[in-house]
Each structure stands twice: as structure tokens, then as C-alpha cells.
Image (cartoon, rainbow, N blue to C red):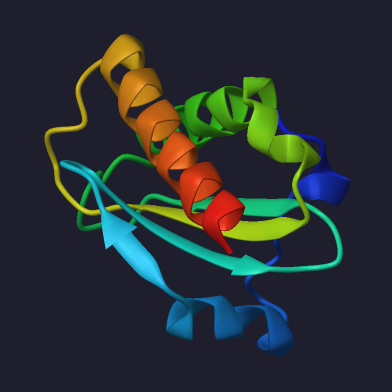
Length: 112
């Protein structure tokens, strides 16, 4: 799981600016990203997507694990991953989709 000092705290007002940052969609997720001084990431699974808190927390932990194992952790960027559909699937499907989204972010950053 991603260490707490690498997680983006969305309760802080200045961190909520990421919602106005560029974003793109995959099948089940919405990715926001913006340049920053150091890497930080947040994962949001809304109650509308998964009503049970235990399942929401499991999905968040799995997403943080995928982010931690990716190479993007070395980049100075802030990322917000938000679930946008109810059919999230199993860990392998979530992992593939988040990894593809992170690769797309890396590609966009390298172009800049």
C-alpha cells in the first residue's frame, strides 16, 4: 500500500484544486493529474459505486498497491483516481486498468 506521506489528502482545501486539473477517463476510472513538487496520489471510491465500506476500502487498498508498484511514483506529480462505474471487477482487471491510466499520464508528462 502507498505510504501515508505519499497520499494526497483531499480534506485540505489547497489539494482540492486537483478537481480542476486535466483529466481523462478509462472504462471504470477517472484520472486527474497535475504537476507538483513531489509525488502524491489519492484514490476515491464513492458510496454510489460501492455501498459497503469494507468493499470500498478493499478497492482503495488495491488501487494504492497498484500505484505504489508503478514507475510513476518517481515523477513529481499529483494524481487522483476516482471510480466512475459500478462494475469494477476483480483485482486483475482493476490493476490492468489503473496501470494503463498511469502509463497514459506518464506519456502526457513526457510530451510536456
